Length: 421
Image 1 (tube, one colour):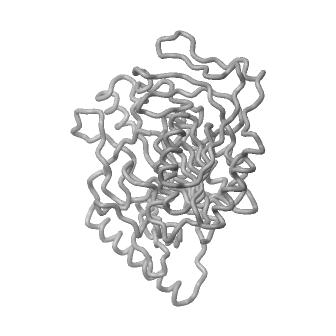
Image 2 (cartoon, helix red, strand yellow):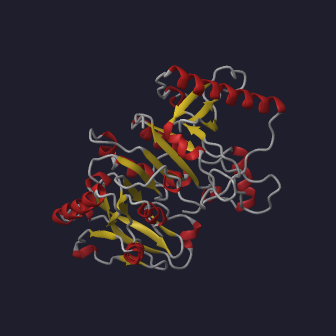
Image 3 (cartoon, rainbow, N blue to C red):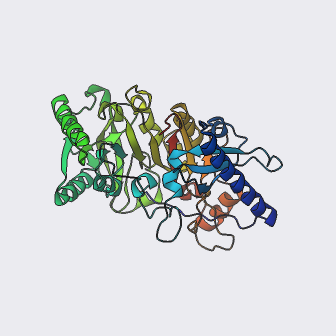
């Protein structure tokens, strides 16, 4: 999806810098003490679920491979410091891109794929929303087993060709469509938008069980052998199996909710009916190393349709990398807070990988600058608000009367605090 950059607000005092140094030193002392005493340091999930806590910043990586991070209390409560030892943060702390930053928004693979400690052979990745398939291809190069969902047939065909060129084994699963829905689509000049008022008369979409079982078996064989195998599912993902309308636009991808965006008012827009499946109806209940979501505001629905993967006794989702788009979530009749609460129910602690997008004070164009920092900001359902009113007003002045169309995209990284390795 489109991504807007962001800038960190200039400012801060020498006192703040000194305080950060003290925090880093205290954290290192805690790490050293834990190692010397052999103490078992657990997770402090309360720090994430309470709205009292302010931004989280990685201060250093301990020699034992565990990243140390400090969650600082609000101004006036600086003494309330919670040092957290999170093994999952080690990948982030130890990783830098070509510019020396921990993550350049929109330009690199998610950290779990870009900087793994070792090969992902034997691990499973779930990729929802492919387009060019960069994450699927990246995970495949690391020998992961991937279940990938993409509703646009052209994208699926393109990715299959790339996998074939790489000599990778893969399965492509298609959902049989009722004749009444076959190839149903409308052009941008047609007055009638595709309607599914009679969808209840059609059977819910499903991958034929014999084909699904065969694909799962080949994926499991590859996983046990530490080799890449991709199961390409030509369907959207959602909370339930149903037929739905997908808006597509040449060069911009597709969305189940983004029908009002200006980019979908350009030439090349089409509507088409596609199958939507629950992720956990396709992906077996097992340990999932990473789930990636980029579905233009439909992320909450995808998580609801993957609940068995989070609650399964045979494993759970360890990490999640998701696009966070406030406008898209609202179009899908949900909110950022609702989405985060859903993830927290599954034990996920979530962080933004950049600061909130802000318009440059002297900007004369509808744009933002890329962040050049390595800050992770903790997110909680009870404390997330919409775009700052000042920025929203600036966007209205610079971008027209409907700033909602210009809310920025950001990436969010979540780690499962119920996992200790």
